Amino acid sequence: MIQHKQLENGFEYIEISNEASQAKIALQGAHIFEYKRKGEEDILWLSETSDFEKGKAIRGGVPLCWPSFGMNNPDLPQHGFARLGMWKVARSQETDSKTTQLVLELNETPESLKLWPYRFHLELRIRVSDTLCMELTTTNTDEREFKITQALHSYFLVSDISDAAVKGLDAKPYFDALSAQTCVQKGDVVFMEEVDRVYQDVKEALFLSDKNRVIKIQNEGSSSVVVWNPWIEKCSRMSGMKEDAYLGMVCIESANAYGDFKILKPRASHTLKALIS
Ligand code: TA6
Image (cartoon, rainbow, N blue to C red; front, side, top):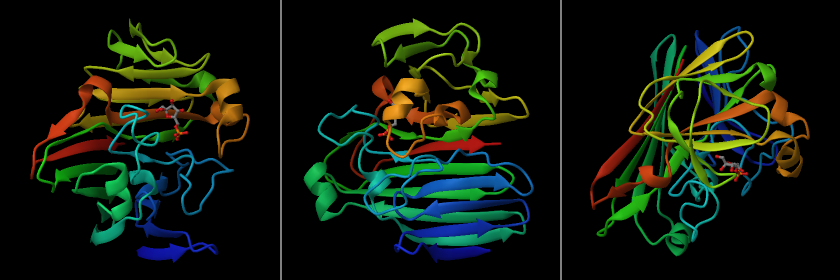
């Protein structure tokens, strides 16, 4: 079932339900804010105190950072503008009883052109099944080339941050956004303090292991992965986040960030894909 719903304040979202899974996707930002397999716990973390209103990013789920990750382009707002844009449903399909597909699209607007002077076509293809597949395709519809950095900024639910570990990054170089140093990962990534790192040269699948489950993340079209947990002090300052929220979440972001930027010539496309299983 694919239902178009709205909250009392007019905030619109699509609710998907099939025999294998369910998901909710806000039209603002094409923001997936719920995904779970039937009868199981949520895969994505969503803040209990998140805003659901026009002009404010949902805290949790999968915000789309585009056309700039973080402050990679200092002329743009943090994480770009696509997460606050009003996307349109381009297509939807119930492929079989366990699989639903939804395609959302965003084009330039007079406001986006003021921030970033390029015409573009963005498409997010979402496949909701016993796995969650997200494919973000950027097409340059301008006459000049442009440069993007981006991320599928996925927030994952963990039972307790002290039991969480990210596997698959051993020996990978990373840029530590907190110290501005480049380091090399030793073993699994575990969380005992604030972590904000951009791993490089990542082609292999990653695994988020927790007390009760393991989530696999396989990216394509990307060689950078951001791992983030705000920990105590930053969490208390973050919008839409309770003080102790850092205990139950970790972000593993499929990215084209920092040196892994993409330059697109007119009519060229690039797809960033993440498969979560
Ligand atoms: O991806 C990690 C990060 O860039 C952190 O530095 C962090 O503050 C964050 O994303 C959340 O950003 P936001 O703009 O959503 O508050």
